[in-house]
Image 1 (tube, rainbow, N blue to C red):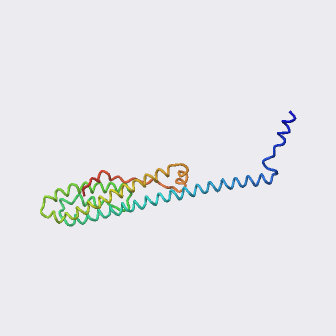
Image 2 (spheres, rainbow, N blue to C red):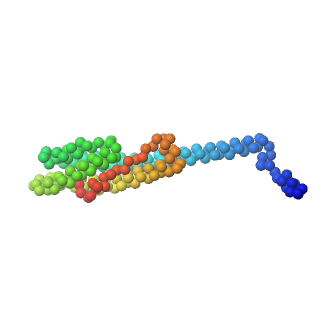
Image 3 (tube, rainbow, N blue to C red):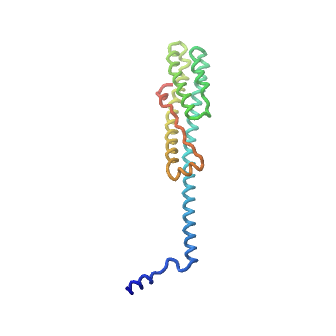
Length: 193
């Protein structure tokens, strides 16, 4: 029994005095605080980077959509037939480059629907060759837009997923980051102008 007491009493204390205990605890707390701040800063940088990448893709989509609406407007002016182009003119008025992605997608789908009925009706008239270059350009823009929309949706989905993960969720709430709305034009992208 005496031997056991000697072993217990022979253990050295963790801290030789109160001063070293206070210093050690302060260092540990400082390191923990630094780690929390570093993790927070990393999450802010990550989320900001992912959001800016999605915004670059967003800008590309908006530019291509604006081009497509511009060429459609030029085509409508060239056709100069109110009966055939009246509905397309209404669709053109729906377009606002600065609108949200849901409104852009809606305007794009409506325009595409009207173009899909206009082209066959113009094909039967003798001046169709005048309009052909516009339809070809609209088709080329649509092909670029399909890739740009897929890129934007992929980046937006990735940002939204990263934003919802812990601890980035705390950063996103603090910075009031909203989910990015996905662009829904897949039904319109059928390989026609």
